[in-house]
Image (tube, rainbow, N blue to C red; front, side, top):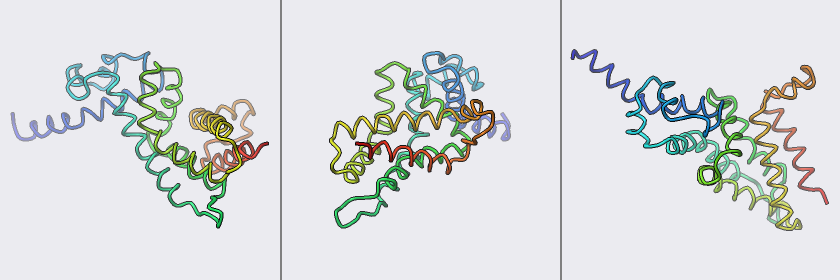
Length: 216
């Protein structure tokens, strides 16, 4: 093997995990996790099945690694923004500021090359096997979501905990749908709205959610 051929082979080997993850993300987002086999992932990635077993071990491990890769920047950004909240003399942050800190990182990610595919995958996770869904989503987002809940409780000290949790549940649904379905309302309104504007979507979602959280 000459030097150039050896270097090329090494580069291909180094890129194999990334190629597998990219192929998995595309297929998972299109067909769901249970609708895709590990063999189909490796075929789409242009690598052999042994490579996937070597680097990841199983399809579920591919999914976990993919979420760790894509979700970590979103969760870390949420923690950063929540840590920058300003509190008044009563120790309360502004409700809208808490909502922006929680929502913006996910919407912002839509502008990245892999953002749309990951958002579709995130939405599809609601329909996957419970044991996989719980583990993957909990590891990816529970810590930052709990921080957001704590901040919301401080912003709304008179709101009972069960009411807060229900409203946060509905917020998650609105957020995931907004991230996963860009273009849907454009079809309904025949082009009357542009949901691809992440900043505009953020402000509309914050306004909508704030009204819900403040409701009696």
